[in-house]
Figure 1 (cartoon, rainbow, N blue to C red):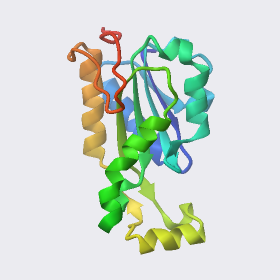
Figure 2 (figure 1 turned 90 degrees about the horizontal axis):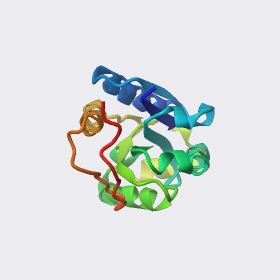
Figure 3 (figure 1 turned 90 degrees about the vertical axis):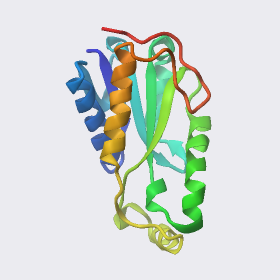
Length: 188
């Protein structure tokens, strides 16, 4: 297997984004597997990683962070891209202007060690039943909109960029986290 598209999801939105990324990479000629990071038994079986987590409290879920920590020896020398799924596009008004800062907060909390090639923050599905009553009230007062806010074109474009990098189309790492990656990827 070439690429693990690992995910940590609570309500399924992050899993579906991971599956779409895996499908695009597969269409570009890579053997991929999308699966929960908590179920990966042998990380060494993969040549590259695209890892994503739902975001709660501006942090990855513990199962995602734990996967990175437990597999540093495998992840550090290999190409790793990361994505987070939060709710920036579900916000309006003054909260919407603060949404871009969330990516930086998440990046600072990512487990140290791997040279992440790039981090991307996507918006997922936000439904009323995902939030406690007080959270629903605050979300509405802050101008939040419930619904499916996933931008599939952006997800697919990002996956296309990863495929291009893996096929040798990039001269180095791109990292919005300020952690440049090393090497040219696994190639084909």
